Image (tube, rainbow, N blue to C red; front, side, top):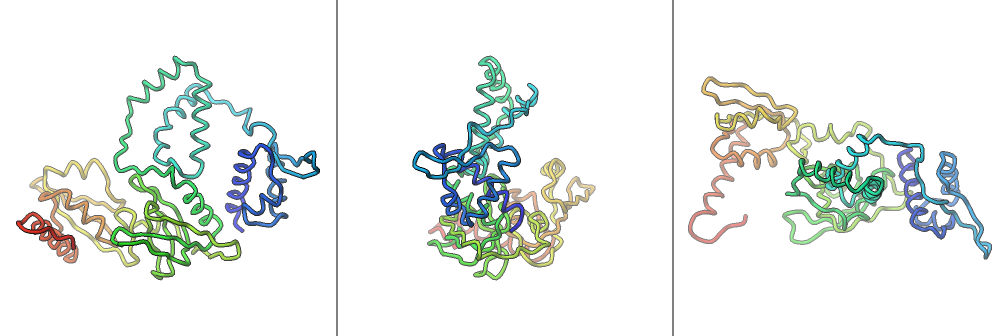
Amino acid sequence: MAESAQLMRQWRLLQILSHRKQGVTLQELAQETEVSNRTIARDLLVLKSVGFPVSEVTTAHGKKQWKIAGNVGIAQLQFTLEETAALYLGRQFLELMAGTLFWQGSHSAYQKIKSALSDPAVRFLEKLASAVHLTNHHIVNYAERAELIDQLMLAIEDHRLTVITYQSLRSTEPVTLYDIHPYALIFHKGALYLIAWSLDHGAIRTFKVDRISEVDVQPNLMTFQRPKDFHPAKYLEHSFGIFAEERAPQTIRIRFSPPVVRILQEKKFHTSQHLSYNNDGSVIAEYQLTGFEEIRSWLLSFGRHARVLEPEELVETIREELDLMIDSYSLGDFSYD
């Protein structure tokens, strides 16, 4: 098993022991983490050896249990006032990940920082924090999906086959997908996505976590080998967002009129973005992409100020979408094809 899987399991042991102050037996820990008693015993010894106060005690009835003595912390770790303030002010950015792994621990840490500061200091920091406001538009709250996300994280780290129940945007009802190989979780534009190989599709697919209703991580013996050359950044290198297509990238050329050129100058919308300036103030933007779905929506947001020059396939896609938009504004019933 990979070292990362061992670390994740040991982190789970600390979580279990922290929440069950009365103690937990070796067998109970083994059942909850789905490994042998011997593996759990080794994990506990590792935790003890690195300084965590875990120990085995015998109850009045002769039952042996493992417990954590007091609070687990790093007493010698001291922050400067500047560091403490930075951590406290940064909490709003972690709000985006509410419900994901370690969120509960980070929230507790902020409460401890707050309790260590004087009331005037807290009021000062709150006032300072209000100077930088993070909008909550298009942000998903994953608090109710914490357990589901934890299961996906474990499946990724342990390389375990997974069964998910998923309903895509265009589906009328959820479907069960077997033999899913979870590769990575990606946080993109306020939402979480699972990158995984799917037996049903015979290819790597992107699944929005919001649309996953059930996760069933298979036993330890049912594992998969993730391709050694797979890396999320490399996989998404030629996508315009979160969805990648397994084909050679194409050159996409778009002419942007002068009123929107500054938008292109202020932000690089893709790593392959290259701008060429024309004498009339317009600009030609070039991208190397494998798919059109996400860039199509982006281009339409510019209205008449963006015109696709190539490839012809994307030109036709834009034309078809514009025709449908015009039809939807004409008299008569709406069409939702």
